[in-house]
Image (cartoon, rainbow, N blue to C red):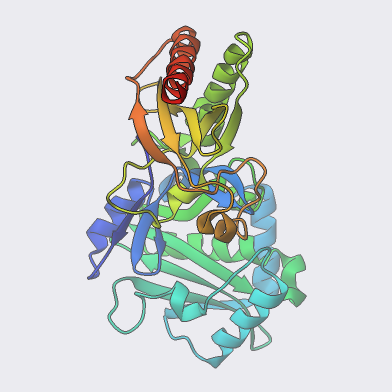
Length: 363
């Protein structure tokens, strides 16, 4: 089963940072993390890691034009991390007026691990217009890698493509340092929010299940965790309809939260296909797709139901339509099946066993 991972670092080890970046990890606070799925406004996206091999980097015509134009208007410098008043004021303006979505937390929380006990070698790229700070970006440095952490800018200068411009400045700085790789972060399969990162140049991409980095035109739908999983479950759903078995596909965003009891058998999947069991509101049969083994497992599961505290809390974060917001407890499981033809037979048998047991209990 592929799931996210979170490695909390205690000391600055640039060689380890290079390694984790090469495996697709991204920095948040004092941790390096990766996850094949990112939920944006309650919608699941495949997380697609990106990086730039600097020796092969070529600026596009539009990027060269933007860099030249903005370099004539703005000045910039790369300096050690100090969260002074001008940086903090710019962050507050950006958070309130520019960021699309909820950017909660203070800047020092996002950069936890960069100050005091330095776990990361973080620098600020400051961009000025006539001596006034109008944009800034934050970068981490390893031995051979640079990772772009975040960028902020004043809304009055949004027409100058400050996000792209700051990345181009970072890339030029990485080349000056003779680094090998530049990591701009990740893009998403179903959200355009981070598509601007592609404009930095000829990026390589990494799928969820491979150590290899490939060019964008080599990526296929099977490289995208969300799309591949949902497609496989949709195939099962269509097959079950031929046997008059109704089902619904759900995303399971709670799997990404560490809120579960540790002594229970819990579902560890981002998506599942649910078959309702008649006469029971909280007993269900579900089908999950194991993407690592290209097979299916059927579970008999319990949940508390939509009146649970979990459901009531998490519906503030995720839309209820299409998302299962209650903790899933596994009662029993089938073996891994590769042939969807056998799945209806197993499900019908399970439904009959449950019905027969009800009859016996009532007699």
